[in-house]
Image 1 (tube, helix red, strand yellow):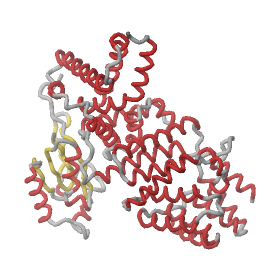
Image 2 (image 1 turned 30 degrees about the horizontal axis):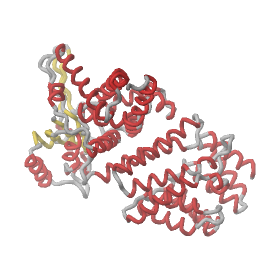
Image 3 (image 1 turned 135 degrees about the vertical axis):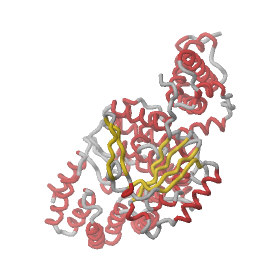
Image 4 (image 1 turned 180 degrees about the vertical axis):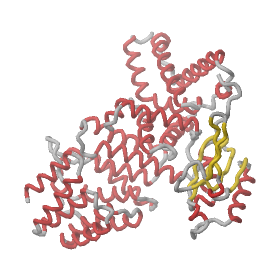
Length: 412
Length: 117
């Protein structure tokens, strides 16, 4: 007995949510073109809406959709080819035999191919981010534009250009060879963390939309860990989960910034912390971890502490020491200096920050001046603290940070 | 598909850095690419002071001394390679010895259409 119409429609909708990205990833491989594959995906679901209510759900909806999409695309190309001049590539697609598209491993690899192609270093970084969110996550162009506070036409253009480069420069739809894999995986991790931070950074944007971006990054992180297990991928997922666990505590209901040491730790999400700590331990035990795992380990030490004073600061300084060796940067040095101040007192930390600032690289970084001002305040050097917070205020761009610095200044 | 790998470098630095390649190394690499079957052509160029730029305007030839544009890095040589995709072309480009002191721009070749529609 056929199911009632609305029940089939609801099922098709849930199939779309669960399978559309997988189907797209396989269609891109079979058709060799992003736009063609997207068109085919829509045609396939249109056909499902016509046929499934009449004939019932197929046993394997994903396989049905891939077949239908591929058939529609080839059919469309043949029709067009009658009017166009002979086009070799179209003939080639039509001639391609369907290479076992239902093979589970092949299809999972398609999703990995899609991720690596969208995050290919030959694409501009902002294009990698936009393309990944559009193609791998299935977000609408307007959604991505809103989340990145970018005009939709600009973002659409970025995606069009990226697809054109993939097609015209022939960026391969492949999982990189083992020799290239570490470097290419780094690029994927960078894109995922960029998406996460865009959703996590305090900003004047719509809070809800931006939180969604972090959730999307965590979903991507999970997908990557499942498809391409790697210690740094686990480390990045752990880092995102541990940062996300503090979301409810890091701002007041009015949207005011709350520093880590002042956060109400009962608001931290224990389930996320537990999962994050498990992943950190797993990544650390591999001995092939990198900067994401180390940052996650630092976040894990904070997550385990009952409050700022009872935090294991020696361990945090030790982790920063390793991080400074693996991935040296002025910002890592600054964070290390702040941890040293917590371990050994503000005077020691201040000496380190002064040395970092003298180097010049962080002169335009508001948090360096704010950190220095904070240590001066603790040492009773109020005029220096005032000058530091004022300098930070001239450099800070995000509204919640600016309001935070103004409150700090007023409290001196 | 064909890719053109354009090797750019500051001429004053090309042969003077500790990492600067010697001709023998460049030749050896060209031979290696040739043996891999990817090589279509590769040459190193004389410095830009030898360059002459030609234009045809209103049926008249204009000839000027120098490269078409003064840039900080100059075209020093090229590889034309056959590759299945960009990754294969990038692999060849990355190991061109001059890439250690200069930059290599990789561009897919556009096949001209004999019958424009």
